[in-house]
Length: 337
Image (cartoon, rainbow, N blue to C red; front, side, top):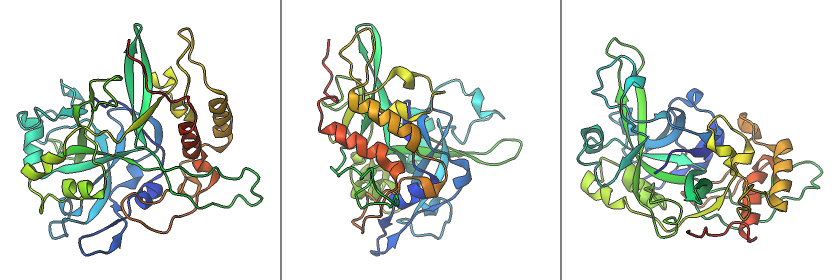
Protein backbone atom coordinates (compact mmCIF):
# COMPACT_ATOMS: atom_id res chain seq x y z
CA UNK A 1 0.00 0.00 0.00
CA UNK A 2 1.00 3.65 0.03
CA UNK A 3 -0.16 5.84 2.88
CA UNK A 4 2.56 8.45 3.28
CA UNK A 5 4.93 10.26 0.91
CA UNK A 6 7.57 12.98 0.88
CA UNK A 7 7.52 15.78 -1.72
CA UNK A 8 10.08 18.43 -0.86
CA UNK A 9 10.34 20.47 -4.07
CA UNK A 10 8.51 23.76 -4.47
CA UNK A 11 5.99 24.27 -7.27
CA UNK A 12 8.52 25.64 -9.77
CA UNK A 13 11.02 22.94 -8.85
CA UNK A 14 8.41 20.28 -9.63
CA UNK A 15 7.72 21.92 -12.98
CA UNK A 16 11.42 21.97 -13.91
CA UNK A 17 11.91 18.37 -12.81
CA UNK A 18 9.10 17.25 -15.13
CA UNK A 19 10.36 18.78 -18.38
CA UNK A 20 9.64 16.37 -21.26
CA UNK A 21 9.45 16.01 -25.04
CA UNK A 22 6.00 16.02 -26.63
CA UNK A 23 5.05 13.81 -29.58
CA UNK A 24 6.49 16.39 -31.97
CA UNK A 25 9.88 16.31 -30.29
CA UNK A 26 9.52 19.72 -28.64
CA UNK A 27 10.90 20.28 -25.15
CA UNK A 28 8.06 21.28 -22.86
CA UNK A 29 7.57 22.26 -19.24
CA UNK A 30 4.18 21.24 -17.82
CA UNK A 31 2.21 24.24 -16.61
CA UNK A 32 0.54 24.32 -13.23
CA UNK A 33 -3.24 24.56 -13.06
CA UNK A 34 -3.32 25.54 -9.38
CA UNK A 35 0.17 25.88 -7.93
CA UNK A 36 -1.22 27.98 -5.06
CA UNK A 37 -2.86 24.84 -3.63
CA UNK A 38 0.39 22.90 -3.37
CA UNK A 39 3.00 23.04 -0.63
CA UNK A 40 6.08 20.82 -0.11
CA UNK A 41 6.23 18.37 2.78
CA UNK A 42 8.54 15.73 4.22
CA UNK A 43 5.49 13.81 5.44
CA UNK A 44 2.34 13.94 3.29
CA UNK A 45 -0.71 11.90 4.26
CA UNK A 46 -4.11 11.27 2.67
CA UNK A 47 -6.42 14.30 2.49
CA UNK A 48 -3.45 16.58 1.73
CA UNK A 49 -2.73 18.02 -1.73
CA UNK A 50 0.00 16.42 -3.82
CA UNK A 51 1.40 17.18 -7.29
CA UNK A 52 0.16 15.00 -10.14
CA UNK A 53 0.82 14.95 -13.87
CA UNK A 54 -2.03 14.54 -16.33
CA UNK A 55 -2.93 15.26 -19.94
CA UNK A 56 -3.81 18.85 -20.79
CA UNK A 57 -6.85 17.56 -22.69
CA UNK A 58 -8.62 16.94 -19.38
CA UNK A 59 -8.83 20.72 -19.04
CA UNK A 60 -8.83 21.80 -22.70
CA UNK A 61 -10.80 19.60 -25.08
CA UNK A 62 -8.88 20.78 -28.16
CA UNK A 63 -5.43 20.32 -26.60
CA UNK A 64 -2.94 17.73 -27.80
CA UNK A 65 -3.39 14.71 -25.53
CA UNK A 66 0.40 14.27 -25.27
CA UNK A 67 0.78 17.67 -23.59
CA UNK A 68 1.13 17.49 -19.82
CA UNK A 69 0.01 19.75 -17.02
CA UNK A 70 0.56 19.72 -13.27
CA UNK A 71 -2.21 19.93 -10.73
CA UNK A 72 -2.40 19.84 -6.95
CA UNK A 73 -5.03 17.21 -6.15
CA UNK A 74 -6.34 15.95 -2.84
CA UNK A 75 -5.19 12.45 -1.92
CA UNK A 76 -8.21 10.13 -1.56
CA UNK A 77 -10.53 9.80 -4.54
CA UNK A 78 -14.02 11.27 -4.25
CA UNK A 79 -16.11 9.83 -7.12
CA UNK A 80 -18.05 12.27 -9.27
CA UNK A 81 -21.33 10.57 -8.33
CA UNK A 82 -20.91 11.12 -4.56
CA UNK A 83 -24.13 12.82 -3.40
CA UNK A 84 -23.21 14.24 0.00
CA UNK A 85 -22.41 17.94 0.31
CA UNK A 86 -19.29 17.19 2.37
CA UNK A 87 -16.72 14.82 0.73
CA UNK A 88 -15.24 14.04 4.16
CA UNK A 89 -18.42 12.04 4.89
CA UNK A 90 -17.26 9.22 2.64
CA UNK A 91 -17.40 6.03 4.69
CA UNK A 92 -14.61 4.13 2.94
CA UNK A 93 -10.95 4.84 2.22
CA UNK A 94 -9.90 5.60 -1.34
CA UNK A 95 -6.28 6.67 -0.92
CA UNK A 96 -5.21 3.37 -2.52
CA UNK A 97 -6.78 1.30 -5.30
CA UNK A 98 -5.91 -2.38 -5.72
CA UNK A 99 -4.98 -3.22 -9.30
CA UNK A 100 -6.75 -6.57 -9.15
CA UNK A 101 -10.14 -4.99 -8.35
CA UNK A 102 -9.93 -1.54 -9.98
CA UNK A 103 -11.97 -2.74 -12.98
CA UNK A 104 -14.65 -4.11 -10.67
CA UNK A 105 -15.27 -1.22 -8.27
CA UNK A 106 -17.28 1.53 -9.92
CA UNK A 107 -15.49 4.28 -7.99
CA UNK A 108 -12.34 3.42 -9.96
CA UNK A 109 -13.66 1.70 -13.07
CA UNK A 110 -15.75 4.71 -14.09
CA UNK A 111 -12.96 7.29 -14.21
CA UNK A 112 -10.44 4.75 -15.52
CA UNK A 113 -12.60 3.93 -18.54
CA UNK A 114 -13.00 7.68 -19.16
CA UNK A 115 -9.23 8.04 -19.33
CA UNK A 116 -8.76 9.83 -16.04
CA UNK A 117 -5.24 8.57 -15.52
CA UNK A 118 -2.61 10.56 -13.68
CA UNK A 119 0.96 10.21 -12.41
CA UNK A 120 1.49 10.93 -8.72
CA UNK A 121 4.85 12.57 -8.02
CA UNK A 122 6.96 12.21 -4.88
CA UNK A 123 10.55 12.00 -3.69
CA UNK A 124 9.50 8.61 -2.37
CA UNK A 125 7.02 6.94 -0.05
CA UNK A 126 7.09 5.49 3.45
CA UNK A 127 6.18 1.95 4.43
CA UNK A 128 6.18 0.17 7.77
CA UNK A 129 7.65 -3.28 8.43
CA UNK A 130 6.29 -5.41 11.24
CA UNK A 131 9.20 -6.76 13.27
CA UNK A 132 9.34 -8.04 16.84
CA UNK A 133 5.88 -6.66 17.55
CA UNK A 134 6.90 -3.17 16.45
CA UNK A 135 6.67 -1.20 13.23
CA UNK A 136 9.84 0.04 11.58
CA UNK A 137 9.34 2.75 8.90
CA UNK A 138 11.32 2.78 5.65
CA UNK A 139 11.70 5.45 2.99
CA UNK A 140 11.40 3.94 -0.51
CA UNK A 141 12.48 5.63 -3.73
CA UNK A 142 14.09 5.23 -7.16
CA UNK A 143 17.82 4.35 -7.13
CA UNK A 144 19.71 7.58 -7.62
CA UNK A 145 22.73 8.30 -9.81
CA UNK A 146 25.92 8.78 -7.82
CA UNK A 147 27.20 12.34 -7.59
CA UNK A 148 29.88 14.21 -5.74
CA UNK A 149 29.14 16.22 -2.60
CA UNK A 150 29.09 19.98 -2.84
CA UNK A 151 32.15 21.73 -1.55
CA UNK A 152 31.18 23.08 1.86
CA UNK A 153 33.82 25.74 1.54
CA UNK A 154 32.30 27.38 -1.52
CA UNK A 155 32.95 31.08 -1.12
CA UNK A 156 29.94 32.38 -3.02
CA UNK A 157 27.53 29.45 -2.44
CA UNK A 158 27.18 28.95 -6.18
CA UNK A 159 25.06 26.13 -7.50
CA UNK A 160 27.10 23.26 -8.87
CA UNK A 161 26.47 20.83 -11.66
CA UNK A 162 24.93 17.44 -10.91
CA UNK A 163 21.94 15.36 -11.85
CA UNK A 164 19.01 15.93 -9.54
CA UNK A 165 16.96 13.54 -7.49
CA UNK A 166 14.75 11.35 -9.63
CA UNK A 167 11.13 11.77 -8.60
CA UNK A 168 9.09 8.63 -8.03
CA UNK A 169 6.30 8.33 -10.63
CA UNK A 170 3.30 6.34 -9.38
CA UNK A 171 0.26 5.40 -11.44
CA UNK A 172 -2.95 6.96 -10.22
CA UNK A 173 -6.62 7.49 -11.10
CA UNK A 174 -8.35 10.81 -10.56
CA UNK A 175 -11.87 12.17 -10.61
CA UNK A 176 -13.64 15.50 -10.38
CA UNK A 177 -16.39 15.97 -7.80
CA UNK A 178 -18.74 18.96 -7.90
CA UNK A 179 -20.70 19.95 -4.77
CA UNK A 180 -24.44 19.29 -5.26
CA UNK A 181 -25.27 22.80 -4.06
CA UNK A 182 -22.68 24.43 -6.30
CA UNK A 183 -19.17 25.62 -5.61
CA UNK A 184 -15.63 24.87 -6.68
CA UNK A 185 -14.93 21.46 -8.22
CA UNK A 186 -12.71 19.16 -6.19
CA UNK A 187 -10.04 17.09 -7.97
CA UNK A 188 -8.92 14.00 -6.07
CA UNK A 189 -6.83 10.92 -6.81
CA UNK A 190 -5.99 7.42 -5.66
CA UNK A 191 -2.68 5.54 -5.94
CA UNK A 192 -2.89 2.17 -7.69
CA UNK A 193 -1.22 -0.62 -5.71
CA UNK A 194 0.12 -4.03 -6.72
CA UNK A 195 1.74 -7.02 -5.04
CA UNK A 196 5.11 -6.05 -3.61
CA UNK A 197 8.18 -6.80 -5.68
CA UNK A 198 10.75 -9.25 -4.38
CA UNK A 199 12.90 -6.36 -3.16
CA UNK A 200 10.10 -4.93 -1.00
CA UNK A 201 8.29 -8.10 0.05
CA UNK A 202 10.24 -8.24 3.31
CA UNK A 203 8.83 -4.83 4.28
CA UNK A 204 5.22 -5.06 3.09
CA UNK A 205 3.09 -7.22 0.80
CA UNK A 206 1.84 -4.26 -1.30
CA UNK A 207 3.48 -1.36 -3.14
CA UNK A 208 2.45 1.47 -5.49
CA UNK A 209 2.34 0.73 -9.21
CA UNK A 210 5.49 2.53 -10.36
CA UNK A 211 5.88 3.83 -13.89
CA UNK A 212 9.58 3.41 -14.60
CA UNK A 213 10.73 5.68 -17.43
CA UNK A 214 9.16 8.35 -19.60
CA UNK A 215 7.73 5.90 -22.13
CA UNK A 216 5.62 4.33 -19.39
CA UNK A 217 4.62 7.78 -18.13
CA UNK A 218 3.69 8.87 -21.67
CA UNK A 219 1.51 5.84 -22.30
CA UNK A 220 -0.26 6.15 -18.96
CA UNK A 221 -1.07 9.84 -19.46
CA UNK A 222 -1.99 9.88 -23.16
CA UNK A 223 -5.49 8.45 -22.82
CA UNK A 224 -6.49 9.54 -26.34
CA UNK A 225 -3.76 7.48 -28.01
CA UNK A 226 -3.36 4.64 -25.51
CA UNK A 227 -6.61 2.80 -24.67
CA UNK A 228 -7.36 1.53 -21.19
CA UNK A 229 -6.70 -2.11 -22.10
CA UNK A 230 -3.17 -1.25 -23.20
CA UNK A 231 -2.48 1.19 -20.37
CA UNK A 232 -3.31 -1.29 -17.61
CA UNK A 233 -0.49 -3.54 -18.86
CA UNK A 234 1.86 -0.96 -17.35
CA UNK A 235 0.54 -1.79 -13.89
CA UNK A 236 2.89 -4.31 -12.29
CA UNK A 237 5.48 -4.55 -9.49
CA UNK A 238 8.83 -2.85 -10.02
CA UNK A 239 12.21 -4.14 -8.88
CA UNK A 240 13.92 -0.83 -9.70
CA UNK A 241 13.57 0.48 -6.19
CA UNK A 242 15.72 1.06 -3.13
CA UNK A 243 15.09 2.01 0.49
CA UNK A 244 16.52 2.75 3.91
CA UNK A 245 15.11 2.70 7.45
CA UNK A 246 14.07 6.02 8.97
CA UNK A 247 13.11 7.30 12.39
CA UNK A 248 9.70 6.59 13.91
CA UNK A 249 9.23 10.35 13.99
CA UNK A 250 7.54 9.86 10.62
CA UNK A 251 4.79 7.80 12.29
CA UNK A 252 2.91 11.02 13.05
CA UNK A 253 1.93 13.01 9.97
CA UNK A 254 2.20 16.14 12.14
CA UNK A 255 5.98 15.79 12.04
CA UNK A 256 7.17 17.60 8.93
CA UNK A 257 10.94 17.93 9.26
CA UNK A 258 14.03 16.76 7.33
CA UNK A 259 14.60 14.16 10.05
CA UNK A 260 11.79 12.11 8.50
CA UNK A 261 14.09 11.17 5.60
CA UNK A 262 17.38 10.56 7.39
CA UNK A 263 18.70 6.97 7.36
CA UNK A 264 18.96 5.34 10.79
CA UNK A 265 20.40 2.13 12.17
CA UNK A 266 17.99 -0.53 13.37
CA UNK A 267 20.33 -2.87 15.26
CA UNK A 268 19.24 -1.64 18.69
CA UNK A 269 15.85 -2.96 19.80
CA UNK A 270 15.57 -0.37 22.55
CA UNK A 271 16.23 2.72 20.50
CA UNK A 272 16.71 3.59 16.85
CA UNK A 273 20.10 5.23 16.63
CA UNK A 274 21.25 7.45 13.82
CA UNK A 275 24.60 6.74 12.22
CA UNK A 276 27.41 9.27 12.53
CA UNK A 277 26.85 10.49 8.98
CA UNK A 278 23.11 10.75 9.59
CA UNK A 279 23.74 12.92 12.64
CA UNK A 280 25.95 15.18 10.56
CA UNK A 281 23.26 15.28 7.92
CA UNK A 282 20.63 16.25 10.48
CA UNK A 283 22.78 19.08 11.82
CA UNK A 284 23.37 20.24 8.27
CA UNK A 285 19.67 20.14 7.41
CA UNK A 286 18.83 22.25 10.45
CA UNK A 287 20.76 25.05 8.78
CA UNK A 288 20.17 24.22 5.13
CA UNK A 289 16.67 22.69 5.00
CA UNK A 290 14.56 23.41 1.91
CA UNK A 291 12.29 26.44 2.02
CA UNK A 292 8.99 26.95 0.27
CA UNK A 293 10.36 29.80 -1.84
CA UNK A 294 11.24 28.30 -5.21
CA UNK A 295 14.47 30.27 -5.50
CA UNK A 296 15.77 28.53 -2.40
CA UNK A 297 14.74 25.03 -3.43
CA UNK A 298 17.02 22.43 -5.00
CA UNK A 299 16.94 22.77 -8.78
CA UNK A 300 16.50 19.19 -9.93
CA UNK A 301 17.03 18.25 -13.54
CA UNK A 302 14.40 16.47 -15.57
CA UNK A 303 14.09 12.71 -15.33
CA UNK A 304 12.17 12.52 -18.58
CA UNK A 305 14.70 13.89 -21.09
CA UNK A 306 18.45 14.38 -21.25
CA UNK A 307 19.13 18.09 -20.90
CA UNK A 308 21.94 20.30 -19.74
CA UNK A 309 21.88 19.81 -15.99
CA UNK A 310 20.92 22.89 -13.94
CA UNK A 311 23.01 23.82 -10.96
CA UNK A 312 21.84 23.28 -7.40
CA UNK A 313 21.94 25.28 -4.22
CA UNK A 314 23.03 23.96 -0.86
CA UNK A 315 19.36 23.31 -0.11
CA UNK A 316 19.69 20.14 -2.19
CA UNK A 317 22.32 18.66 0.10
CA UNK A 318 19.75 16.42 1.76
CA UNK A 319 19.40 14.42 -1.43
CA UNK A 320 23.12 14.36 -2.08
CA UNK A 321 23.82 13.06 1.41
CA UNK A 322 21.36 10.24 0.85
CA UNK A 323 23.47 9.22 -2.11
CA UNK A 324 26.51 9.15 0.14
CA UNK A 325 24.60 6.76 2.40
CA UNK A 326 24.22 4.39 -0.55
CA UNK A 327 27.95 3.83 -0.44
CA UNK A 328 27.84 3.07 3.30
CA UNK A 329 26.42 -0.07 4.98
CA UNK A 330 23.70 1.79 6.94
CA UNK A 331 20.94 1.14 4.40
CA UNK A 332 20.78 -2.61 4.36
CA UNK A 333 18.02 -4.88 3.23
CA UNK A 334 15.97 -5.77 6.30
CA UNK A 335 15.98 -9.28 7.63
CA UNK A 336 12.71 -11.07 8.04
CA UNK A 337 11.97 -12.58 11.43
